[in-house]
Every structure is written in C-alpha cells, then in structure tokens.
Length: 314
Ligand SMILES: [Zn+2]
Image (tube, rainbow, N blue to C red; front, top):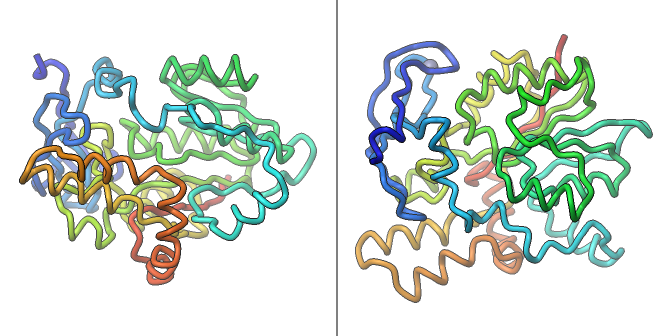
C-alpha cells in the first residue's frame, strides 16, 4: 500500500543536481507509520533531503490527528500579565522573532500557522496578521475561536498581492515543504522591498545529529523533507533573492529527550521511561530547567534548532 504513497525526488531543488549519496535509510519512528525512506545528500551543493518522500496526496496520511504542533489544548491566549511577560523574556529561547510593528498598518504573514497561537500574539502586539495552513482542524479553530484570517491551502494558492507584507514568518515549516525555493520566491514577491523574513528550522549540522544519527528526533521522518545546516539555509536564501542577516542558535535542547526515547526504543521497545521522555520535550518546565545548559550551548552555536532572519532585496 505504501509504494503508491511515495514519490522519488529527481533533483536537488537548490542547485538542480540529480546526483546524491545515501546517508542512511530511515523510517517513521515517532508514529510508526509505514514506508521506507532514505536521507540523502546532494553531492553538488550539500543539501540533505528525504528521498523517496510522501506524494502531495499522501501527506495528510503522515500527519495523524495527534500531531503535536497542531494541538491547541492548553493555549492560554495572548493576554499575558506583566510578570508573566518578564518571566517569558528571561527564558526567551529565541524560537520566534516578533519585533514591534513599524507602523499601525504593518502586515505580518505566518506560513504554516497551525491554529494561530503566534498570530494571536502578533495581533496583540499591533500587527495586522494573516496565516496560511493546510491542515483542516487547526484552520477551523484559528478562524472560529481566535477570529483569525487564515488561508486554508498552500501559500502559492493564497495569491496575496505584490509587496503586501512587512514581515513574513514560518516556524519549523520550511523543512516540511516539497519546494522551499519556490515558496521563498513567492515570499519575496509578496513581501515589500526591505521587508523582513524570519524562519526557524532544525539544524542537522548540530552535534545532536552526530550523536543520535538515525534516532535524532528532528529527522521527523517522513514529515521533514529537507534537513538544513546554517550553510544550506544560507544558499537557499541567496537563491530565493533574500539576504540572510542573522542566525540565532535557539536556547533549546528539547530534541535531546525525544532522541533518547527513540534510541532506547530501538533496543528495548516502548516502555514507561521512553513514554515520559517522549512527553517531556514540549513541556515548558523542561525548557526552563534546561535553560542554563541550552543557553551555554547556544553561545557555542551548538544547538539543534536555529532561527534565521533575513531581508527582501528587490
Ligand atoms: Zn544540490
């Protein structure tokens, strides 16, 4: 059944080369969905990507209802008290980038906005916000309960006007897209000259990947199609006509407990310990407790998630 769910990638979308080398065979270790995949590396530009990968019509099959980033339970809304805001800024892991809007009508786009938690925060800061999301359930929640303007579909089908946005964002989304170059070129079209772009991605150039290999949680097979390093994301920006200005190494080591769970499970199967390790990674308390270590590793540019800021050049 899985054979017809997959497609072969014929060429690297950054440099167009058809040559690649196998890094490792991989499977969906997190949800255990069927299919055999490979992580390969372009021998010309070095981009690391999944091949084969799910076909566009099979993508929803690989995002189960329990897919963590689509869950809105526990979302507390955008009205944080002053003390909460101060604590939040002390433990800022740099996963998102949200400057104040430069003008009263400044527009912000989030690609892959899920149920709209970030858009809700941005709106509270004064931005006029727009989201794009392909998953049905989160779009429904964002529109009905948060009253957000979310386009249901891919970015290209939203057909925003030229030079519409002041800031375009996407948090842990570029690695899920079949052609990030095409998407970033569209971002360049709809964002004003001099406007900003901000994206976060897992960092396969990190020691976490060298340590955990095929059990590194952020491989997220087969939902992650591309695996970026600071170098390959830089090449992608350049080819898209974007100027890369800053890379933040997030103060976040939450890939580690999940990667430990996958490593143990490969040997001993799922047990109480691995179930706890699987649940720890998205708990706020884990990020707070591990913050000093994560901050130190971020200083040495060693963490497994990066946030990249750039500017649109026209
Ligand atoms: Zn390439």
